[in-house]
Image (cartoon, rainbow, N blue to C red):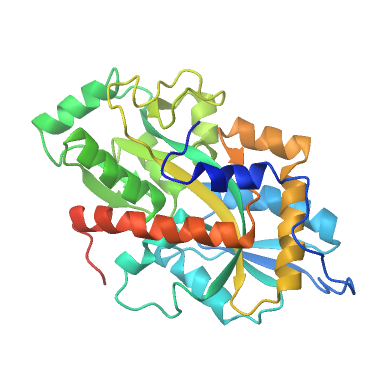
Length: 327
């Protein structure tokens, strides 16, 4: 899998340093002193949720305190983000996020927190390609058949997403532009709900990560037409790349990470970054990510912040061309 929209140096800077520590951890060993809450701004079963729960198990074991995952869906993740932004900067309330956080400035005219300054990124957990999927018996033999239908009948092919401004939403807008089609958007409260909508026939397609649709892929109920990246992934060997499917140059990727409220001390951020890197180097975690077609992150807090800033800038053009209006 390649991720050309992000700096290769930043990506490798995470993976290559997994066995290493960032800066010295808390000398007193005082953190954490109670359970750690990790808020997820999406419904259970989506990529953010699935990966956060696996990481939480690892962090709980290494940090010696329970890591509790709480789902607070709504507002494209902004409801959970607002609660974490208000929390004490002591490392006991964290935010599990994905690159949908980068879309928030284009969705809301006013947020209850400073988008650029409210959080300290701890690290990136993983990077994952998105795939375009349809129902098992959908009348599209391949990606080109779907594109042909969408071109012939604009706005009749509906796609589901995890909500306005979600990673699938913005990536499908990019797909529309690349393929020269007009699709009809139906937002849901999470990627898993969007997948279920495809299976029920409510919408015709989704563009999600493997993590968000693993069960439906394994059962064969969801059929992938194409996946992002330069090469096929082991998690979906039957899925051609977008280039193989006749749409070269199109990429659709997600990343997942953890963030702490602004003002969280360096020592706490460093301890969490080191714990994440250690978790991401464990064989079962690597296998878990590989099964999802994902690669581990492990970037420093500073590198993660750079990735977020680049992603925020990237979505500006998609928001404008896609007719996204702030509310």
